[in-house]
Amino acid sequence: MNKNISVSVIIPAYNEAGHIRYGIEETVRTFKELSCAFEIIVVDDGSTDDTLELAKETAQKYDNIIVKQNRANHGKGRALKFGFRFAKGDYVVFLDADMDLHPAQISTFFDILELDKADIVIGSKRHPNSVIDYPLQRKIISSFYFFLVKLLFGLPIRDTQTGLKLFKHEVLAKVLPKILVRKFAYDLEILANAHRLGYKIKEAPVVLESQRPLGRIGISAIYVTWIDTLAIWYRMYILKYYDRIDNHNL
Image (cartoon, rainbow, N blue to C red; front, side):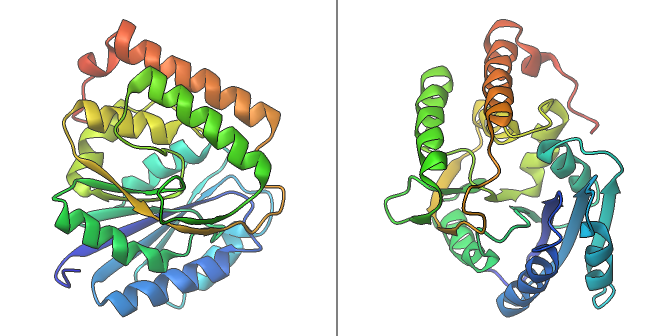
C-alpha cells in the first residue's frame, strides 16, 4: 500500500452505542499501522441511544476524527452522502459501525485496487475466499437479491451490499450527486452508476463475523430495498434520469 496517500473513512451509525467506541478505536489503530494519512468521519444518523455522545467522547482523544449528526434517521445511504461532504482524502472507505467487518481488511482492498488498476474495490460475501459467519436468514436474502440484481443490471460483481468498500475520491464526487436512495439499496445505486460511467469495480474477500445473531434485516427493510432496487432500474433504463441529472453539486 502506498504510504503517501490520504484516506477518509466514513462510518455511518444508527443506535450503535454498543459498538461505536470500539469501532473508532480499531479504525484508528488499523490506519496508524498502515502508516498513511487518514481521517475518520462518523455520521450519527438520528440515533436514540448514546451513539452520538460516545462517538464525540472517543473523538476528543484524536485530532483527525469528525463527528456529524443527522437529527432524524434518514437511512444509511443519506448518512454516507452527508459524510462525504467532509471527506478530503484521495481515497474514501465506507465502513459499518458494528464491526461485522474489521477495518484491518482494507489493506487487501488497496492491494487489489493497485494490482488491478481499479477505481473501486468492494467486499464480497460471495467471493470464494470469503469467510462468512452470519445468520441463515441473511444468507438466503442475500442470494435472492444477488440474482435479482444480476438480472436487472448485469453488473460484473457478485455482491453489492457488504459494508466495506473502497473508492477513489473522484468516483464518489462524480457519482454521489446522482444518488437518491436513502436506505439499503444505496450501494447498488452507487455501483450501477459507477459501472455505467466506465469505472472499474473489483471484489475482495472478506471475513465477516456478525455481532447480532438475528441481524437487523426485517420484512419492512427487505420490502423497501426491493422497491428501491426496482426504482433504480426504472430511473436508469426507462427515465434515463442518471444520464440527465446535473452532477456538479452534491
